Image (cartoon, rainbow, N blue to C red; front, top):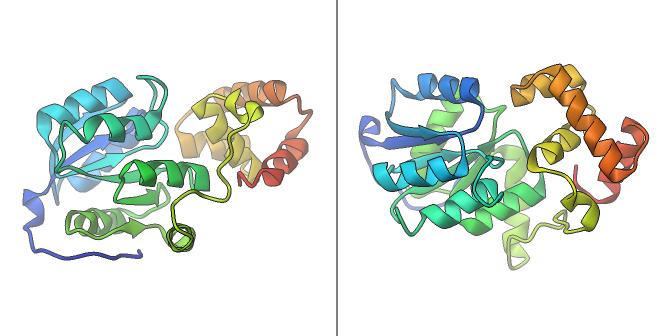
Length: 230
């Protein structure tokens, strides 16, 4: 983990954690991992539920998935924007399957203290939570270089961030599936990564190809690479 900030000392059992993720099984697994170390005060699976929960529980650290349904469709970024005035002392650590510059940039600009991917181990996640609570900024190793470069260039606007009509046709979940498929994941691997069925993956891929007017996965990979999405 890459870190920067000021440190204070706190008994970890006094650190109050909230978990926001729309995949119930994944959320339950994260909570089971964290409960022996932290005080779990709330959980939610959609934007409006997360905002309400954060306002009610005032957690010290919120573990936040980037692509969460509901609200106005802004996902984790919308949760950050709406929750900060309601619980200004809470810090946010993004925990997502996505490692795209677009997703990282949007939540960091919205105020997240760090960003780690769902490939992280339980021990590293516990360590990351402690570090953001102590005032550090924490990023998965493969993201740290991008974030540092973005700050050195005067902001966190990622080179890979794009706003075009084609990408806007895709839902947040379709974009998630598209990025994984474009990186070479099999349907089965995408299903396991996103905690959805293979049939659901196939449905999303068909929708992506149709909306982008592409014929196959090879064209999809080239389309994504041309836009620096992967």
